[in-house]
Length: 282
Image 1 (cartoon, rainbow, N blue to C red):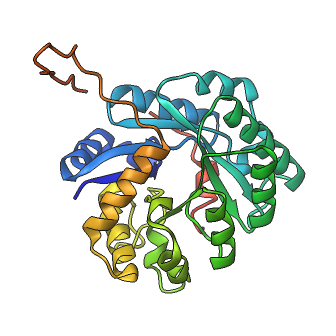
Image 2 (image 1 turned 90 degrees about the vertical axis):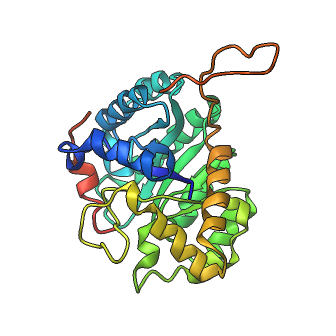
Image 3 (image 1 turned 135 degrees about the horizontal axis):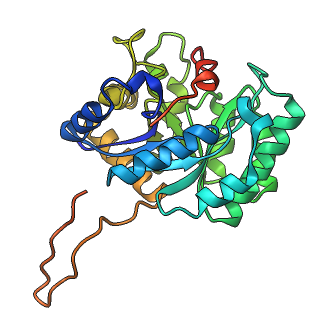
């Protein structure tokens, strides 16, 4: 089963002991691509460095709402020009934790959304208990390619997001008894969803409480398949194609194509955890 991990944090210290071994295991197990997500200066830079080391890992750059007071626009502009940085994120609003003043969160989210539009980059949104304000800022920025990571809204907000042509993404929390996302999963158009782990957080059942990793992504696909009454392979294939299109995955570097049409492929770190530690209970 071919899978696309759209939201991971493999640069964090939780993976220091076995990062390269785990990455190799992921690719051997059927994970084809990994998007490693930045959420502040350090993790954005570290995600880029990780992407430079691995052909099928790509990075995002952004300032999470918890880090809004540290926002560095020039850094985002610089990273947005990097070929291995495919999106701006994760950015957005978090009115549950409120670790940054709400007015600062809104201003920083707005600025980053506008930068994403200026640089023609997709946007990875963190939205917690701020549905309509997130929606309003994205609409005002005229954002086109948007994914609501770890979707947490109800069916009404899901329809609002989907009507804009935006994407929703599901994590291991859909396997929890109190997830309340079955109706959203049933109604979503097949071309507008992706799957993720948000590792090392939100480990799916039956591994909840352990460190999460892309190796558990298949459990998200299996749960969606169960709810929609289709096969896990269908979920994997559809979400893979959606993610490949959304992130505009570049072709692998290849040698020049001969007149006969033959070609041969070329083959193919981090600290600061305080912000993401604050998200563990999401």
